[in-house]
Image (cartoon, rainbow, N blue to C red; front, side):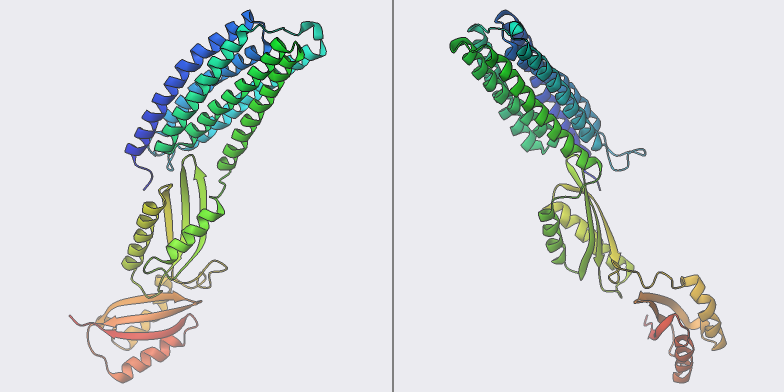
Length: 380
């Protein structure tokens, strides 16, 4: 079963609330930075204001993604809508990269033409301090909520706020250098450094999310931990072919579990249910788990895949039962496909003469597909 709808809704509600607060702060802060940069003649502060404006746009992307990802699985999206968060994070990364390139090109042009360089006024430092305090506060608030609801998208947005705070510190250094040291190019240089930081953050978001879109496996230490854990579950003899892939905040897993080949179908299914239940309990990130029960290790090759099915085999076996006049005494026939052969198990309702059993055994075991025959008497 996938992640519960209640959990998804709780994550969406928390994401929406924290993001709306971010929208309000970024809207007011971007206006203050842009106006402050204009009146205080600071290109770095204007660049930081544009950066904050891009944050405002990214906040709306986060809101859209969180809303889409909160939906339950449906016919068109049987694995849920977690990829919406991943795609939104890629869009956020692209937006950051584009903004960074624009800021850097503008600052470089001014450095190439010194007469266009702006000379910041001390007033700019007041707006920079406001930005640092606001962005660092948003980082701590967003990160606390992200950890509580386990949202990678919110964590990415939190680090986005932290990078904004750091970039504002660099702006402060550039502005202070231009104001107090009378070095006019420091303000533009700070704008370029801010642009480089924004670009790096955008590139990292794109790379990390793209790895999810191409079904990248969970971290090796996690998969090793899962293998060890499954090996300790009662009824599991071996575990192989573990495959995992990330989807937003969730991890999907496909697992092949080897059990005693003579177990009933229902017992094998019960072991599979046990594996799924215990994995979810101990690894909450794993929401969608498929467990394939194997009677033997088929990781390299499946020796039994070319053997006849029940109908094809009964075409050969049933005439033998009729010839020996014991077809009416048969209660059930079990087929065990093991190591490239079929082990036949016939359950009868009455005791049969020894010579009849021997004749049946010799005939059946003469077939190439059958390794052995076991007769069992059913006691009511």
